[in-house]
Image 1 (tube, one colour):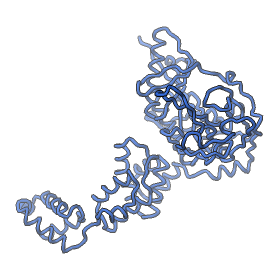
Image 2 (tube, rainbow, N blue to C red; image 1 turned 60 degrees about the vertical axis):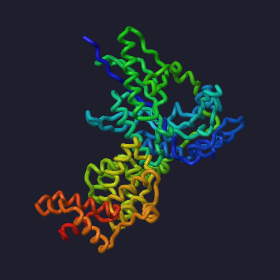
Image 3 (tube, one colour; image 1 turned 90 degrees about the vertical axis):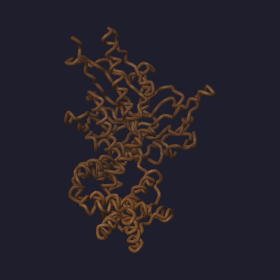
Image 4 (cartoon, one colour; image 1 turned 30 degrees about the horizontal axis):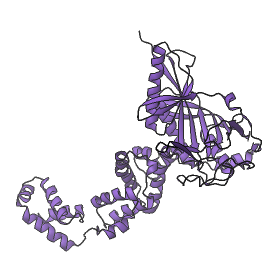
Length: 476
């Protein structure tokens, strides 16, 4: 009888915090600058330079800890983690080993199997390393230190997850919490949220954990799911063939759908941690902690209850809209301008969701502004344009965030509201389509749809379909 295996998964999630400056210096954290332009002696590890802690980093880290039910370490400190890579200019990383800022928390996830608590072992603050850029043409490797010193929190889970579905649910919950806090944009495609997967397998019923490997280079939920499936299969194949799983760090190649070994997995002693002598103890007073708690935002659960009462839109709409902070922000800001919650919801639920799916985009990649969406809705309400033209404009707005009012003016898309001109066109369509007229008068209601279409075509789409329909019925 074949043996059955259980997958045991824990995650190390790195999140770049949304501070304007780095963790220990005043350099910009903005993404996408020319190489080595957001640097100074501190973040490039020059001798004699001294770090100064960014207070906002502590506040963001504590806020994430509070939102994930952690205990906050009110007296914590930084340690040096020593290792020697070209992208690590000091030859050590400032991190937290002995007294991390947050400990012993959890988040609750929902899957098809029901709800489950995933434990958070700790959250600690640290600085990011630089970035190595490999030039295969010149056969050289260059280093960009713009990212060096960007503030991170590392969220270390307990090994509580058993499937890719649970991992994705956990990551989505974390991302939503952190985005709602404004602590990070959590854009996987830009690397501001990165997950390393620690995975082992064991026979069903076993109490001891198997040997784990750590999977790196995972920058999308899809690649995470693929990596979990691939690594589970690889480890089971080894065990089934009487071989041992080696504890190591592996890199996942999504193109080849396989992983390869990078290095043996280090333990804490390999990094020779010791307290950082250049940074003083962090003391989070009761008053400071109370202030951080008081600044916690309205999270999804509270938002859902408020939307139901205040906006009276369907539960399904509320669930989708509040699923990401970006969508919820667009909804609330657009409604504040046009005062049409159901219409804003319809545009988000139908056209926006359709285009996101077609273009394989996440909600946090939406480009159009809430003000432009509100303007588009008001243009339809005021009968400046009809719904068909509005959908065409929305597609352009989705791509380029154009001002719909300006776009209508520049492209001559205003609806034709001249009743005389409309009546003349409808009469011409009736005269040109005697068979459809006869069908309608014989009781075939659908025939009028053809006549509406012909009128809209003659008016180049600039008529109000409801007005056309009404006028046709009157004249027939």
